[in-house]
Figure 1: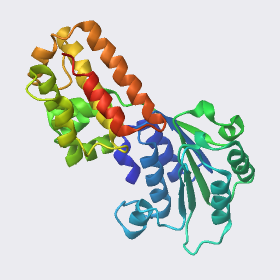
Figure 2: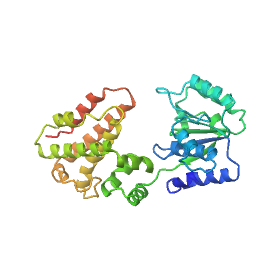
Figure 3: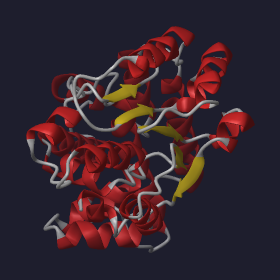
Figure 4: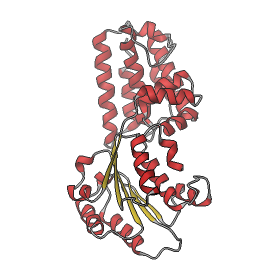
Length: 317
């Protein structure tokens, strides 16, 4: 069964969903809650496949159409900008009330349900009060405390646990991912499948190359860091800036690891021998600075300007 591939990362959730499906006792509404990167949306999509594909294969026309968000019986609602608006929920309900041209269950998935406006939440609540036959809701959140208690009470809550870094590392190594990547990836995502995609992406490799080279420049002063970044880091943009800053933050934390003779995240990084000369208070100050700059991405900021500030700030001499 398609959900079994998640058994090593979310065993409790998978067991509940598979057993309920096999016993024909699925709830009309589930609330998937847990930290970012724990596989909530992936499992929601594959739950829809389990309901609509008799073999639960993941590769047939039905399953592929669900992946492409083109199956008429599966509707995925995402925030429009910073919120899920009343109009989106009204449109969803209108679609669910239509007679489907395709046999089988209807599944609607609302991602980041905590971002619903009050009017959107009230509209959904009215629909929730009279569950429709063979219609299933999967609500997803990283902030369950932001959801109306009346919505929580009408759904079965499934809590997704954070996969430990050691288990993530072992899973990645077992899948043939390098030791270097298997140390780094669990720090930037808790999703084994997302980690695999990153490991195979040219963009991720380029990010690491740029960060290693910036470390070499900071350590040995043979080039201007900002000029180097302008020449080689133009692929970093609003969409992937968060990942880049996360990697840079962990690279800088490695300086502290090296100073304290702890295991480093970035293995065989010879520049750390030189970078450990940075005063500890400066390292801590710059880690705090990186963390604060990373948080600014939650709001509208000038990303190129932010990156320029970061590259210059870390140039310690």
